[in-house]
Image (cartoon, rainbow, N blue to C red; front, side):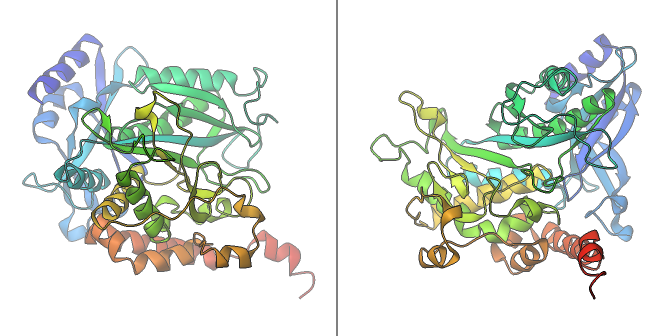
Length: 442
């Protein structure tokens, strides 16, 4: 860390960086930030910077509000959309309480604890590769689309080609490798895929990605949104999340003798994910709008099953290619891009580790089209579904010993309280649907 701190100080001086933004996230994964000047940087790296935690969603009460934002020097980057003269850098922070102890309400710390549990079991890497989908609209007031393209369509330059290009360049300038960028299924829907990396780095990347996409869109005079279902009748936006565990450079999910090339560790991990998916739903799909996406159709993963081909199952196992042992992985499909990635990845890992430690048995794959099965057929096959609303998801999470243990009492209780308020605020609204359909006849 001393070498990293010196490197940050040197980079700031060499690149005329005047301001450094300190980033962290609240309990919902929304980025919070304040800026310091380069003159305060050395002290911030050494001791952190104090702030009022009572004003941050899900953090402290007013009588215990003093918090310390401790910058992680490995996350220092120069913001490419800000001026080069008197440039602006950023660092992602861990949150401490006075005295230096990690704050139990910090989502980044929650993920660190999950990774420590994995390391105690003898594994080194929880690799994550999420695919975040999003929409471009004319503005934030209404979902006015930019194009009528579909999946992999090459849209004209007055669509989003330049937007994606500039976004990819900005991501790469911030040290985030990109594998793909393309038009998605929905009109004006797009996707840029980051190369997989360790879970903590990837959670930082997801937070950064969302800021970059929005900033570059704003520079082009449009609005980017990660709202899960902004347009009725169109595909929603998901965050299909690829996952695997490594010991050193060996993928412990791979078994050459298994028909599906999945090791017993992989199967138990996946079984844990399936077992706890309903209880976790309130976290990986945390908004009332999330459940407008998680409905049958539109390739939405709502059925608690796994498959090698079926995209309506919660977990898909991508096809194995000989010689690509390191690429054997699962794909957890229900999270959406508006989740808190630190909490989502932490729950995924804890669920998988529970499966490994308790020898959970993985069900047989279901490769038939689950959409075409009747409700009676799914019931006979023992196929459950994710909750149908945030209200139902909250009630399941609130009773979950697993989620409480994984998140810790502080985040668990405050998250539930926050989501109950959101659900109640939504539930009591009178919608345009009710006015259009019911007012004329009742």
